[in-house]
Image (cartoon, rainbow over all chains, first blue to last red; front, top):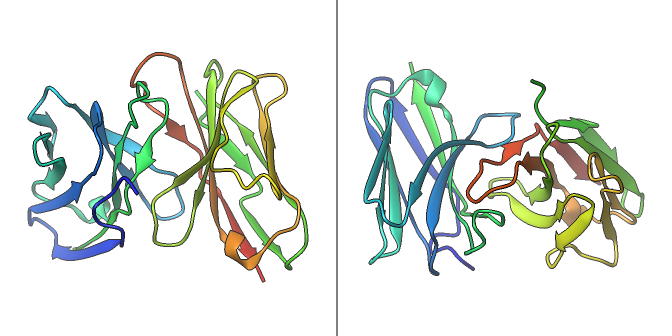
Length: 112
Length: 114
């Protein structure tokens, strides 16, 4: 498997709190993509970080990438109830992003 | 612009029955994917196409699963003889050409095999 953590993780927090989710991967990747999947929907890309970037921000989202430890994190500041979703990280399997390999994900529940 | 559409949204079968899933990608997207997503797991690639050609079907159980994209637009995924282990959501995604272009996912078909 490409992934260090195989089981879906679960987090439950209150609205307004900050949260960080982590993932680790086993083989080289040129990008790490983070996806959000809301109930009954397909995943949607929320942030992409390349191997030559250590940090990438988009609104309340911040992704980091440490290629030496082969790990990435996604932080959300000032969470909203609408951030409730499953978050996946994904690597590109060295194919220019054509073949994406998903990790097992983190289920985030944000209570109002 | 319409997103990726899939049908049906739900299917319930007995073991041994056949089922087909249909996907209409975003217009102009040359690459189309089928993923299987078991409950509480990440999507797992089954097959992907560029235009009408299969690029990678290494994870497609070829004895019972088949996928086609005959005109390089819509696609059909078929399970010939479903097993309980096939219970999952089947997701279709499409993307335009170019490195690291975003994949756009449809809502999926939730399959239950009894």
